[in-house]
Amino acid sequence: MADALTVDIVAPDRTVWSGTASRVIAPSIEGEVGLLASHEPLLAILKAGTVRVTSESGKHEFPVTGGFVSFDHNTITIVADAVATDKD
Amino acid sequence: MGGQQRVYRQRIRSTQSLKKIFRAMELIAASRIGKARDRVAAAGPYSQAITRAISAVATHSKVEHPLTSERTDSDRIAVLVITADRGMAGAYSANVLRESERMKERLEGRGKTVVPYALGRRGVTYFKFRKRDIGGEWTGESDSPTVETAREIARELYSAFTAPAEEGGVAELRIVYTHFNSMVAQEPRVIRLLPLAVVEGVAEPGEDVEPLYEFEPGAEEVLDALLPRYIESRIHACMLQAAASELASRQRAMNTAVSNAEDIIRQYTRLANSARQAEITQEISEIVSGADALAAS
Image (cartoon, rainbow over the protein chains, first blue to last red):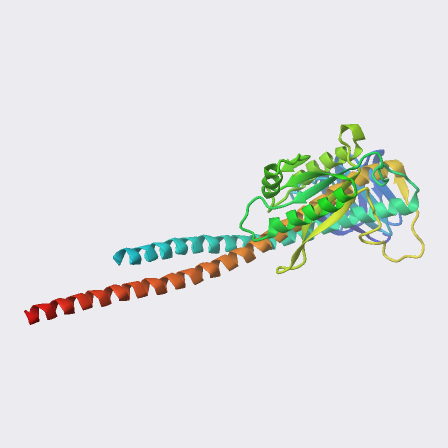
């Protein structure tokens, strides 16, 4: 496995989740994008859907209503308009 | 004579119950202020992420956006004034309103028209009493602002900014709020929100080679989606700062009120005591002189 990704998922009023992950799938408005390490820098708008994060501690799912994702130097920031609370 | 004493006792009692109220409000403000400061901190990552993303778009593409360009067709300026819903916070709301009045005079001197938007009941009543036209008003949650309200305000101001001049479009948008420096120092501040100047805020961490971004769907669309969110997060940040400031000034004002109440109680106790003494002295002298009169006869 290549380098791990640093992931931050932020909502307007809090940081929802942050940690390292090996893979992130986000619902971009042009379709789902899967992000692995060393992806090229990306700035994409999200539509309503589910952000899936695969990390060492397991898989996490975050339903979002919209927002955007930025990827840069193996750092992913998912900026969500609103996130339904993760139950696990 | 006895009446005098009763009046003092009554005043002491009412001041004591006021003191209890002040103390309770001080404690409430003190317990909420920690939460308000946490909220300010919690909103930080979001606005940083947005600012970083916008500066990325701005450096990697030459996109002209209506939100970033100056409007010359309208001389109206929208001012969002953030005040408290309740009093009992010392000069908190008065300071903000004074700052906004000062700015209004300055702008009117330059031939502009100011349209106030009021957030917080104190501001609303202030403008209504002076019969000014209010562009919009929001009340009810000045000490714990929510994202939803920020979004609503942003939408309202955004539509005012994009409306044509004949329909009341505004050329500029400013916010007057109270910045929370520390528990003991808060200052009213004015920021210009629109047209946007994205240069301020967090700069990209120093890297020589800027990464080449891929924008999805396109740079322009990304900017379109980002800018309203940026405005929203700025407004939300101002509201949170103002909420923390409000609670801090309320705590301080109530602390002063409690010690003032204590002073008054002390003063009235002294007066009541001397009234009681005077009454006793008079009674004794009446008895003694009565006895003397009886003995003489």
